[in-house]
Length: 191
Image 1 (cartoon, rainbow, N blue to C red):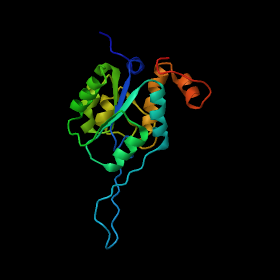
Image 2: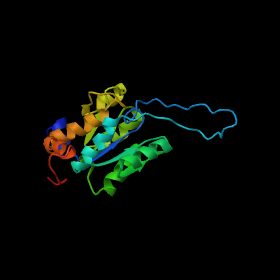
Image 3: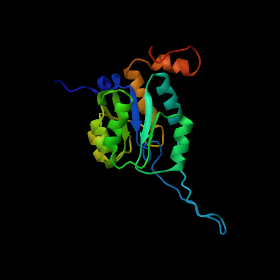
Image 4: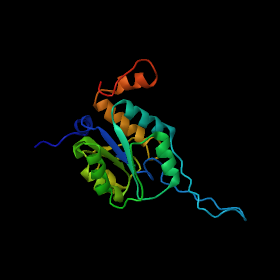
């Protein structure tokens, strides 16, 4: 059986799942101190790139479902997931492979029709189960070694956008989706 190229793998993708810290963000976590007399609820601050938000809209127009799988629990991530209208949100997940396969099943797809974007060793089980494993530019060496495709941008700096563009271009949908996004024509996800 011949080994599939990254583009051939990308042509099959109908579901894009990804890690958060190091993929959707640059991996930095900020915990600002509290002023004296203020409530002591921990506040976590993360930065998200607007290009990645657009990527979710482009994926949706291309008929690709999206979701995240992350080890951490964060209200900031929950808020961003709601803002992006992600179909699948799994936080507090140690077993990313199990979560990946559960989501694939819920979506009525096969693992070959799903991609996973990761940056570190905890992402390897999901990357190994995916039809298309993607590492971000600044991923750890272990993740890059097992990826079918590595993004030209770093996590938190548009890497998810790179992944979506790669998939849509491989599926020969890019021009039509881009035109639809900027309002020059209409397109249905089945096109």
